[in-house]
Length: 405
Ligand code: GLA
Image 1: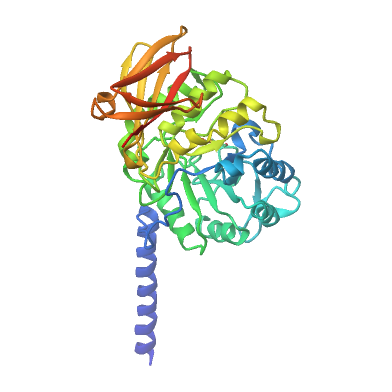
Image 2: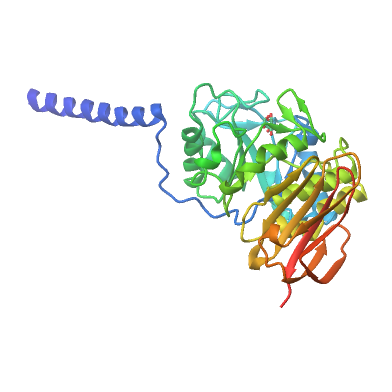
């Protein structure tokens, strides 16, 4: 009897210890495996709006409702924008059971009610968290609460999670993002997973099985170029993305950060360039301005259907910078069906006459094509060999070249 009891107790202790050892080893070294394949939720780059660029921590349910309303009334929804994402600072604390709590003063009706409201507009709803103990804004992060948080998001009706990288200490990014990916997949809800570790570990090399988009750089700021603390101007972000083209594909996109169009730090011409170049990068188009107070120029840029069509091209091949001389450069993107998108870009202070040849776009020199200027709307038929025009300082000529039968 004693020996049976002893044997059983020993066995139980050993089995428990073994299970714990496996778990401890797995968690300790963060080698969790993803059982379920990545849901294909982003065949083209996600489009939406995020609170951070304009509002930082000044978020509330009133603001989010206004932005959802404006996304519909401004024509942004009709143009393809879908996700309304609350960035940092919606969270306040955890309850005694560890459940994440929204700031009760700013979100008195709760996150579920807000998600319902966004959904009632025919839009999708996103939240932000962080793989560390705290978010970048010092709110509770998800480290150690990944599965609990993912279940909570699913209950609230979350469709998109942006997951940041502050306060992560020595964690391995691939492992940390894999844990949250697993948690989201086991939550029972389809949730787009937006990886935000700023490109530190070159996520394009490991993130395809894990997330749908991944930041490639530190934060953007609303300026043509230059560095401000850990943020970069638009041109700097563009340059850091130029060589990453081979790492993007449907359901896994390089994310050069959210749009600054309409935030006031650049000219209309510069915002046109920003938007055109993001479309060439097959970037997620996440507006970062106040949608409820857009001027006509901003609305016109953000809803340019043809530029959006380039961004959302189903082939999903990121554009490349194929030529550069001084301040002038040419970007080309191969589109489904053999069309090409080309951006003739003038970074300089003086107007420049620029052209792109069919050869530069890997098209036969004699091919006759229709050339559509995507900002002026002008279409020219029967063009062969090359096409160009005058490009304004800091401006672009953005073209869609369609071979004619
Ligand atoms: C980091 C991210 C930003 C934003 C802030 C929020 O800086 O890169 O996009 O989410 O945190 O605190």
